[in-house]
Image 1 (cartoon, one colour):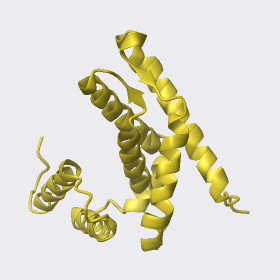
Image 2: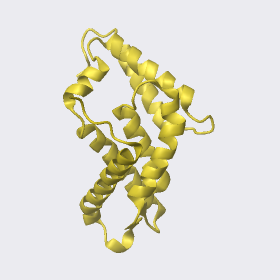
Image 3: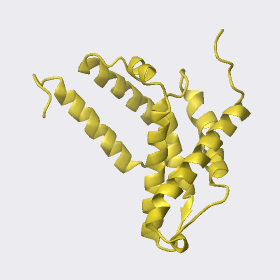
Length: 178
């Protein structure tokens, strides 16, 4: 007997609870370095982030892809939603942006860590680098075809292209660099 498929509301609640727990945990860890007067956290941050996440995932992402959203799409969208909502607030804009970038990355990494390692390896068929490069290329082209044309994720896209370039070059290396 397989796993029970969650309803959309159950998935929403699960994601909201995960994000809320992650933000609270991050605040406990990160907040030690700052006086509470330097920052605050939006009371309903988990809800707002998840609401934005769901409003983008269902009409703008899932409609254009055949498979379920994989961990990288989930992590990427969650990360960008956290940046959009800015759950950590401060009068110091630099501090606010840094805290939100760190919590966004922390949550994205948490998404990876919470998933089964074996399925991660199977889902990517990481055997030869050629197959891995082609898989990344296909996913990148999928992203380019569904992203909003006025959304310019320049730095993130730069990182993706740089990683693709490095993987492409590894195909010709006899040894991986040390």
